[in-house]
Image 1: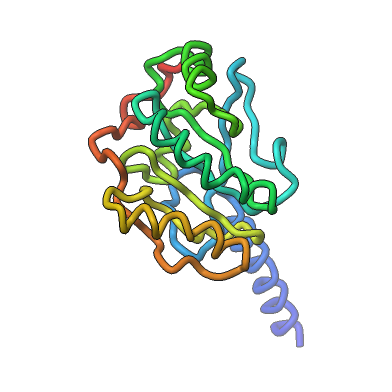
Image 2: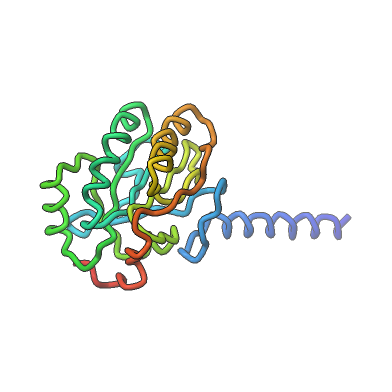
Length: 198
């Protein structure tokens, strides 16, 4: 009986430890589709750290990784995403062009007509999501599960498919596509970003 109790205690401890490890996200875990999305954190224009829960009341979220070079494309995207935000699928833009100051970047986005919330990344978030070009989109559902990770497409057919992704998410359907090409795969900034953003 004592052996059984020791075995139960050891098993309980192991389960607790594995749960703690599963919940820990040190940034080394690469995103896996249909698994819990890696943690999202970013900074405001003043350099203050935030998470989506500071902005939104839902786990469902669309994050657009972008740079000043892709302003026009993102402004077009917000026309698709803004109505979804009103229906419960909020969207935000994370600027990953860390060689432009936050204040200069904010001014550029505001002049272009961005109405979605704008935040900034020092490179860690883009690395965590393995961003391979911009604009790049991550979608997670209301349970925090990663449902889409990819570009917005280059062809007219791809862009049409992207338009329907948010609608599918709103109706709790798994997206019909889980990845589209990024608009410009050459704009892969995060390896150069660490510690540069000011």
